Image (cartoon, rainbow, N blue to C red; front, side):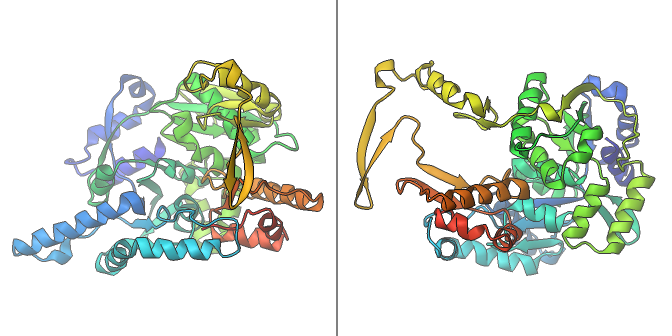
Length: 459
């Protein structure tokens, strides 16, 4: 809420954003219960190529219109920094082979040549527009590792980084102390052109973490548990802020995983305040010491730096002892349905016969053990209900988390050592969140084990 307030104060012009907006946010404690509408201007915009290309097309169209009317087309530019990351165009046509990534990227360039030529033109034609080329990584990880400013320095004026993006999982940036969420293309364009976004002054749910996670539990187990609890509470349209001593035990990657899943638990943001872990991550990802000092000094001065001694008022409160988290999976259909791993078999068997829906397939009891034979690559194979046909390490929630990916690599290592092989009928692939992932898997001697099982990098 302080980020919303700072933006309103800084951008108050008594036209788009008025003094009343500032006063409404100042009185947040009372006004958040009234579904009050406010105006907000983010510091920047991040786009991915599927939804971002139309935004750049519209800018080009406006330039054409300006020229036809006798004006200077070069005056049409984004008024705030805009980053477009090309990451949604690649498809896994080739998988399980050493040259899969190269072939998939060649196909990506062939299929999208016209779009990419247009984007390359746009990167030089417009001010404030940066294009991150194909093959760089998933937009959210690139946003974390490279694009996030955390604190802006605009000609000596410091203010918090904030962002809207044309992807629902833009919230991953909340893990590094940046307020941001996903919006539609029209809203993104409005922000690019300096217009404020209309939003309801949100309630803020404080989610207190205590304790530490047990050995063997991962960020994926934690995020599915958190998602279950928050969906039960109901957080649609609300901000969620994670706090408490347990936050200190979570790595930045684990925090980003929790923030990434905000759309699944329904919140607008899942925010972690800036703290020492944030600064350490930013240092690891190449930010200068000058920038890091500026971030910490500003955050402490604005009382936005987590010390553990804060006394913050929240609209609602929730608490979780991290030591109670247990291994779990999601499904069988929705990514937010929580199923303890120990109950997975029983849960799936129950879903087979249950009425068709999110937790049911409506399969008659006499069909539960049905099997079908088929041929793949000249070999006979068999498929039954529950057979795995695709094993893809590709989710943006997981493929940027070193703990989860190193665990996958260690499982692959043990499997290879025991002589286990993947059924050839299963399509295997690995799509890392960024090149950093490939480097640490390779340096740890685990990438070749994944390759042996068919989990070669696909793009």
